[in-house]
Image 1 (cartoon, rainbow, N blue to C red):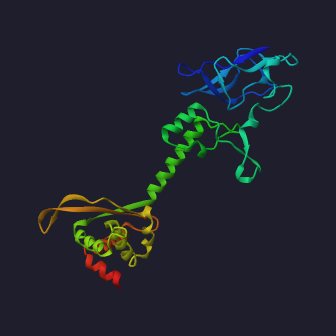
Image 2: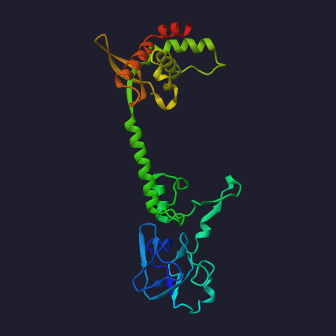
Image 3: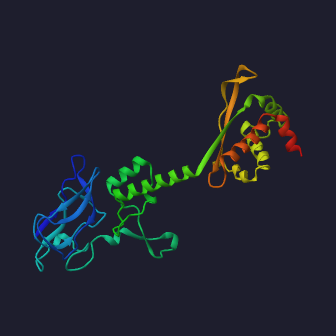
Length: 294
């Protein structure tokens, strides 16, 4: 009876995860056959058999972590005695035709009150965990690609690629139009408003004024009523900037306002006309006041 042990995974680790078995208990094994794959913190390795016989017992199933030198399987002749210390409950040629360890990869779903089992995302190879951490993605959002229930490097990479593709498609579907507003025009007006309402009310900010201007402009451009959603309008911070006013260079407090529009539904020219309407109200506190008073 031959002992198959976990090979060294590298200089920086003394344990590895079995991510896939290529053989099942009872299979005939030839010298050089790939038995299983392991994932270390850096790469994926195939482990070949150094002997011939039959795979009699799998001690460590897919998703299990084993230390370097630990026995993970036995190869021998059919009928040959398996060592008692081997613990054949995981999967052997004498007890189960299936790969060992799979049953522990499934848990009952608490949301379904213990109904049909669902895959547990907690099994992930060290390499998969490292890549997920590097890219800031959650393992719970990644589905394992195989029956084993183990999240591997390719599962994480595939998930990241799908996210990138989705973001790229979303970016291609939307355009932006930006204008600059002279916040200085509103400072005295905002001061009077806040003095009138007193300290018992939330202070009126320029962003509140900009939102009102957008609301008034959308009456003329109803397709932009969803600009009211936070993700569709962006109001920047006021910054001091040199601008030309009546051929004079003056210092003004300017703020950028950007509107995001769906290219499939709205042409850029229409978006520019909409922001021009917004600009009209931004340039005149009196006009906005009259509009709101109607």
